[in-house]
Image 1: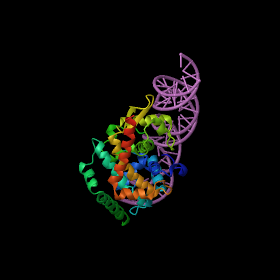
Image 2: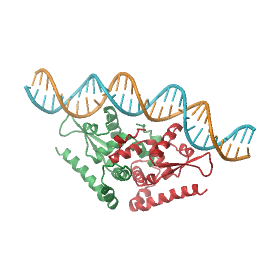
Image 3: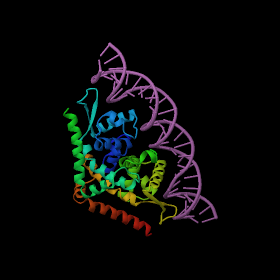
Image 4: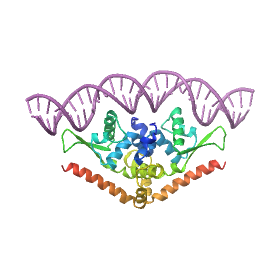
Length: 145
Length: 145
DNA sequence: TTACTCTACTTGCATTATGCAAGTAATCCG
DNA sequence: CGGATTACTTGCATAATGCAAGTAGAGTAA
């Protein structure tokens, strides 16, 4: 990914966003962690897009540096690691969902049901709250072990 | 940019979005055309991020192929070309603005005023309508020449 | 009409990032 | 104790990028 030179990449908010989301793999990892409940290296590796191991390690480190992911030992197994979404990542949910809504409109073979865009349009806060609750559920279940 | 293999990249809406927005330069070009009123090759080239000429040509062609930009001769000068945002691009505005809101929250040295996020939070549709009107103004002024 | 400029590109090449396969170190499980 | 699992790292071929230079066509001033 493009390196994030502070002097070059800060200032313009869109440029700031582009520095993070403007990378296919970071974007898809945020999807996995925010929408699909994935938390471990192995789960991320299993996504259908087929990220390779070196790129995955690189992007996880990047997202941790950016304060989007918190790397912690897996409570279930000391040899495993969990990557939890931070508040900064959670706060990205509305943008991510907005992009999903847009994509469902233009990707002819989308897997998402049409009702999804509708429910977000009618009650955006409620939709976001639902996803947040899912994230809480996954994280609390993991941490409570 | 990553090639967009139909068989691989369709189905999941987030993956679809990642195929377009998950490229720094496509993302920034969408910003320029949707938010900064830029329409010509030279204007895009002038953005502070410093895109190089070959990449710019490549991404403009990509975005045209994707149906995000419409390439037309410049009414003011036959030797010049305009790239207009399509409906598909305009419909991306809510997602783009959501990302700006998120970025203004986390980029400490953001240029955007705090009031921006507030006004979008209070009246998202109105904020989007304002940007749409700006796009209309730029395009109609250009085409009316 | 000629020469110069401006615009939108293309081309070549060195550098960087990516994808793939293989390897490794630290657990974990029976 | 020994094989499996997990989270990586390393090496290498290939692809994408950045930079500088070149080109074709229309516009402009002398």
